[in-house]
Length: 81
Image (cartoon, rainbow, N blue to C red; front, top):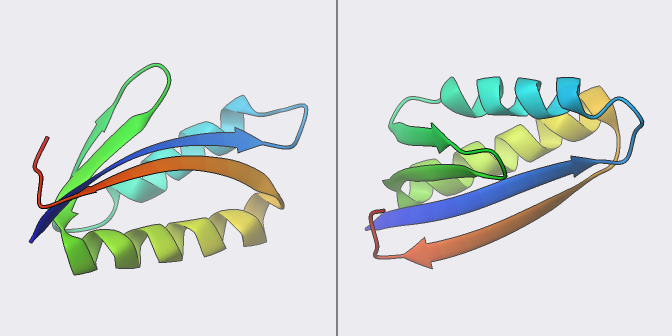
């Protein structure tokens, strides 16, 4: 099943542009995902398991690298944006 996720990152840090750029770069590194970045969010499209594994990995990576961030995410299962 295809799933679409829209994700926005809000690092709890004064220097927030760098972490946002790095998480976008990280999301682009996963095979099997179509990644489109807009000014306020990034949209991911892929097979549900691949997409969820990428989100799980990328959020853990982000926490280890940058500390606490707020991620606002919308998921649409069975839909390809």
